[in-house]
Image (cartoon, rainbow, N blue to C red; front, side, top):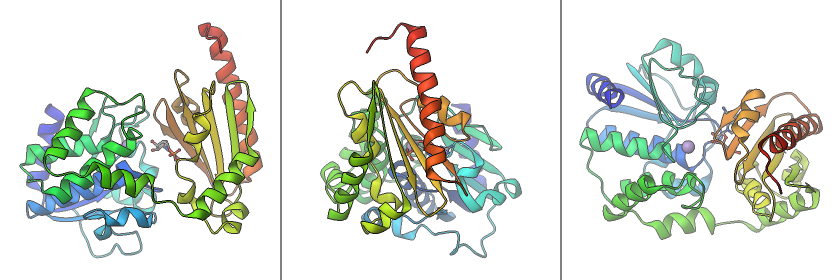
Length: 329
Ligand code: 5GP
Ligand code: MN
């Protein structure tokens, strides 16, 4: 609670506030940056929300999202406070990283792999979503919620819990989400916008991933090359959720998807179902995340090389640890 008090006083004392999210933003990150930016603007702060990556088009129907700016659009703003949301390490803010050493920085995050890189760090992995921490902060600041703000803040809670299915789904996230629904959040609108809004090209790309998939015991893995994306008229955010479909297979504990987009940039998405901690594997390879969902990224490399490395690392940990803990499949 003293962390929140310190954040409240720093926010109250500051006038020009920059709010940053992470590269390749997900629903929780976009929701968190938009909701805090809208909240602080309501309190007459000169506030800017920024993310150094394109924001997928379908998020732009949510209030405040189309006002978030890119790195290219950022100029002539001298913040006296930077708030970094949903980022476990400073590299996650992309090219904004140099701002962090120049300004007073507050980090608000729920990743267990957080490196505490801010001046003030409110890091609590017991929250299912960073959007809940933003909601808590906005409430403490006296921000008034209308239906549009409630909906964009609800978005992060829904997406980071896999629409209230993942192992992080607990009483508190239901309670926070229910409060937002009472304030006018629209769960059906969020669900259809995120889950039932696919292009046919995405389903074709999904077929390629299934074609490439290999299942070995409790591990499923696959890959998508840059050429696969281009041939199917897709970009990197078109494969969001694919790795979860591999995990959904019966008896699969770990799913790995290795993707290349753009050329030479390789991203690894890791998911586990019941017990394996994928964040430890991601952290060893310079990435991070949560126990059941983690990732890491590499530049100037080949997909095949990363795939071999990650698969063999996961196998070592997965089958080594299972025999140690006596797990059976
Ligand atoms: P996804 O597989 O959806 O890209 O990411 C799953 C989780 O891992 C998210 O919580 C995300 O923040 C984290 N993550 C993904 N990629 C990276 C990365 O390159 N570095 C770090 N630190 N975390 C990542
Ligand atoms: Mn998150």
